[in-house]
Amino acid sequence: MTAPPPAGTPVIAFTGIGLTYPGPPPVAALQPCDLRIDRGEFVTVVGPSGSGKSSFLNIVGLLDEPTQGTYALDGIDTGTVSEANRAALRSERIGFVFQSFHLLPHRSALENVELAMLYQRRPRRERRRRAESVLRRVGIGHRLQSLPTQLSGGERQRVAIARALVADPSLLLCDEPTGNLDSRTAASVLDLLHGLHRDGMTLVVITHDADVAAQGRRTLTLRDGFLTDRAAHQVIA
Image 1 (tube, one colour):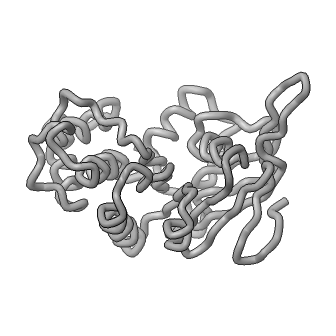
Image 2 (cartoon, one colour; image 1 turned 60 degrees about the vertical axis):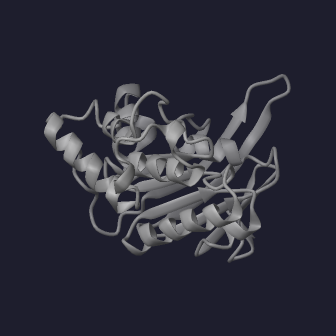
């Protein structure tokens, strides 16, 4: 496991980050921008289709490399590390939650969470104990041995959130986490995210839903690749 960053270090720090796909003609998916997200923030990101939300998510999640600028995650310049170390940073410091859950259908809830620690140097007994603890934390401790097909949509998303939390990441990065849920179930998942935030978790939630966006303490808007801080009403560049 990597050492925690010094106190006061932002979880996310963009300096002139931009992403342009080669042409012809070139397409600027994310215009150069600066951004700071501190530990314990709850930030939502909104924008219409084609606005750059996916590009933003892929850069924050270390899935794509920007074509310009510097991205520091927990103070680590992600542009200077090897691909293997980028993968390790992604695994250890970012927990992903997706709209479609992405659970292994023939593995129990417990196994789905436990497998997220497979490449960490933890004894098997510790992995099992840790997975059980996180599943109980998200309110699904009574369904440890259930398969995803035996769970409701809300329960599957709670398992997915447990899987994202099990490595004790610096950042929980959520892509439309309520998109496949009815309104009542979505509200319960949002309550869970608020509880995690109260416990100190840093959350970035990407959504098209205005009600979900309003849950954040701060909202960023993407339009035509330009990132705007709604609270400050200014383009971040």
